[in-house]
Amino acid sequence: MFFNLKFLKIGAVAFVAMLSLPVSGQDLLARQAPIDKKMRAVDSVALQRLIKSDNLQNPAFELYQDWNNQYAHRCTATMPEVYKIDLRHFCMPTPSQRITSNYGYRRSFGRMHKGLDIKVYIGDTIYSAFSGKVRIVAYERGGYGKYIVIRHPNGLETVYGHLSKQIVQENQVVKAGEPIGLGGNTGRSTGSHLHFETRFMGQAINPAEMFDFVAQDVTCDYYLFKANGRGLALTSEQARNYPDVVYPSDKNKPMLAMAEHAVKPAAPAKKANTVKVHKVRSGESLYTIAKKLGTTVNNLCKMNGITRRTILRPGQILRYS
Ligand SMILES: [Zn+2]
Image (tube, rainbow, N blue to C red; front, side):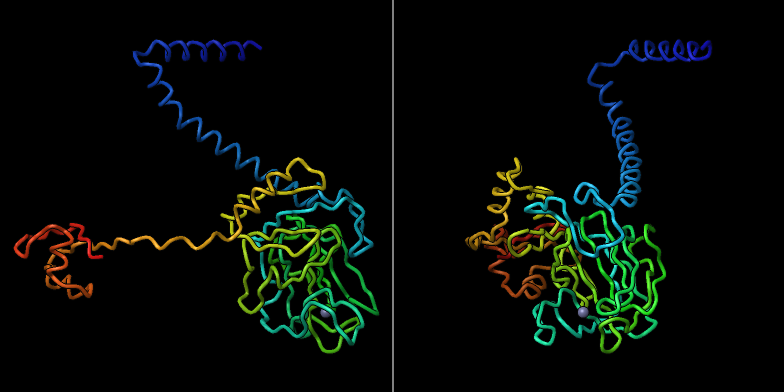
């Protein structure tokens, strides 16, 4: 108690000393600003770290609210109309670029094929597509074979089927790119391959909308999930216009309408008269510049209000179109 008081006193003295400095209020504010900014940065980094670790323990808890280790794709929570999925911190599940079966209706099945098949060989390492928490590690003889379901903080669940070996356990936190299993041919499968699914609250999304296996990249920074209709690939810039989530009869709806309006491809802008300029480098003359830019000395003189005898200086800007 005594020490606390003492420190308090010293603090107060320092504060008074600061106030008595012959500086204007503005100066004082200016001097404090960088410190405040730094503090804020430190705080938000620590906070982000905390949120991140919490996210991995309870990934996308705000969406799912439950965590069961039984059903690969059953979800009873209310599905949002729209949800912005952050794809930026991804890792391709396999370096294989060969798609052997696409997402969609398959006649031989008599039903939908709700994933993407990618050629892998038995024993090939399979990686987690994002950081997250392993929800299911199971075996389904007539279907997925040995499979894994991982839930991610971005709201997605990814499914990896027909594995020869699962090397993670249920409820284990994994990082994007962490090995989770080995490729195989278990379950209902002819020829070793990875059956890869991306689901949002149980609803399958064509993985090709988000993952380009040929390019080994995601298709965009954000994917806007839409409960009724096809999702939207968004750049980070476009994504800024959209609310993170919109529930039916949500107050964010007007914002969504605005975003849809803003992101709609604008009518092609009238081609502006572009002004092209050249920065003079040392040693250049009007003649060499004209030659380089595919114009004439006369033209350069006319456009820049100079004569053939004008001495150019390095760094000078000349308009040439
Ligand atoms: Zn498949």
